[in-house]
Amino acid sequence: MVCSCKTGNPRVFDVLGVPGKRTMQAIKPQDDDLARKVQQWRARQRRVGKQRRSRLDNLVPCDVLSEDGFEVLEGLLMINHKKRFTAAAALQLPWFTDNSDDYSPAPQRD
Image (tube, rainbow, N blue to C red; front, side, top):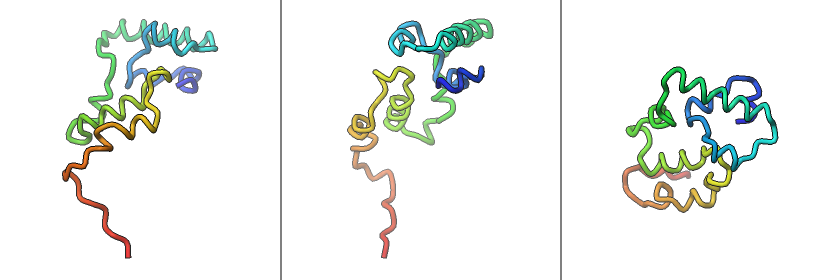
């Protein structure tokens, strides 16, 4: 996220939404430039009338990824590192632990 903000093209905000004030306080950006760019991006979204916080559900439709899978994806992409899933936590979610037959097993190797 920091790299894309420094280039002036934080596309991550288009997908995940602009971090709110609480999130920005939680991640405590060390770079004043980053905080300024987040404020500018927030103002830009208000100007163009974007009300949605996240477009992730549009980019990954439900026929591609189940609700359980979407929960994993969204949790792994959290901007706030304190709320972001760890790999260990993600592996405990139903998308990984559910043993449904909705998929075919991988072919056996000889």
